[in-house]
Image 1 (cartoon, rainbow, N blue to C red):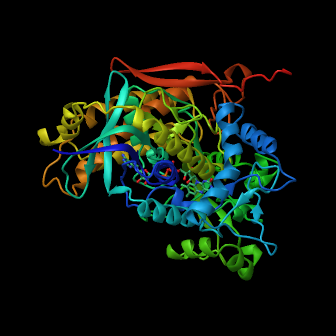
Image 2: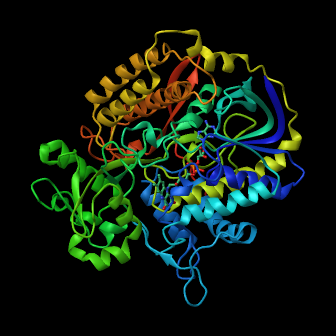
Image 3: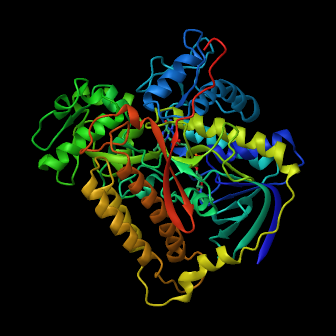
Length: 557
Ligand SMILES: Cc1cc2nc3c(=O)[nH]c(=O)nc-3n(C[C@H](O)[C@H](O)[C@H](O)COP(=O)(O)OP(=O)(O)OC[C@H]3O[C@@H](n4cnc5c(N)ncnc54)[C@H](O)[C@@H]3O)c2cc1C
């Protein structure tokens, strides 16, 4: 088995992974930094998909305190206060440094100041952007720098398991899809930045290779995760049956600019749910759409209609060129007709418990970006996601650079992780993992989705247990190189573990808060202002609780 040794091993090449690699090398250019990513380098993950932009306090009329409060109100005060404050305090520094170090450009006004616009949930227009290609700009510029600084990059190379002994992490077992031959990557510090698990639901806007690998790896290694019930749905995912565009986001701007949502009876229904109609928050509009569909007033493909044609063809062309193009790809013309949309799984607020320097509970394991939990509480504001991945990716890189030299690499036996990953090859006649994965995603969508209640979730938890057993029996054959069936078997193993965390935490939280809505407990309850935790103990999934982390009181109280 091939072995490599590195000071810092970064897993994932979205905003968090790229910033971690960049800053580790910036502090100490002599460090050996290796970045392994499941997708293509510079082309994978959700940071690249960022269109709306990046929240940052720049104007003297805005303030850090205001951004902090917006973030906490958005998160229904479930956020780790220290992580949320660090996010908003670091964001201006990071935006400045991304320009200085990597040349990341955001749009400017005629006076040369960064142009800022508003997104939902903000009391000040503080979102910087690069047209609607913000993510492409960020990832492209950061990728160039990471390559230029001599990082060893392994692409289409997934982490299968962390190398852990006595609760300490020293690297990971990697599997390059192109060869199918394992690589043991031994590292002083490992940075987990694999980007969450939004596609565990059958309709999702996120990059499809993300199936909760990071959460499952951290969980198996013994880390604690929190807020896993907090799954965010974007209200307007495009319905495009049979197309990869199914579930892709139709931007919030369409509703902000005056777009209407109709049910199949041509009723503009949002007024029944919220006086702000289509301009209500993401979770409220998602639920409005869901209730209409569930009541049998959905469109032929199970959605609702989103219509901007009344704005006129010229306005549609000028305001939403990207969205117009996206819809034309599936044969719908936004200038003259409505499109079918439905809620789509967009982001997971939960994740691995960290402190402000990205330390998880496991020495040697840093976690950043969507893989971490606590920054966003019960709901993430648009524009705070990419701020999170770059702010905490940078912190992980700085911390890795300062600690890597102080940890001697312990050589941990990879046999167990390799044997587990190879298990499907030992069997014959098992089920197809792709079919199991699809069944799993449908189950999550139907029973643990936008609107939740105890009976359906209990059914889901039982079904997930049965699915886990079936996943343990799948078989794989053929060549190991580019074996998509094998990759899928590894995906579904992790996804089902994450699904169980989400479903069990969602059943336990008997209230509605932020993105988590229980039809049997429709109100927010003060005494539930605490985090649910989940970890593995003696092979069992254990749930617990913790107090929300607050900032230390000042001398003045
Ligand atoms: C359509 C869409 C639009 C969005 N728009 C905005 C916006 O306008 N503003 C905003 O703030 N946020 C937005 N977000 C959220 C934002 O994209 C995320 O919060 C953020 O980019 C996540 O960054 P990350 O680095 O944690 O993960 P990602 O950028 O998703 O990167 C994850 C990386 O990990 C890799 N990976 C996965 N599994 C493994 C494994 N097992 N081993 C190794 N590598 C692995 C992937 O290939 C990928 O390279 C949007 C999200 C979506 C889906």
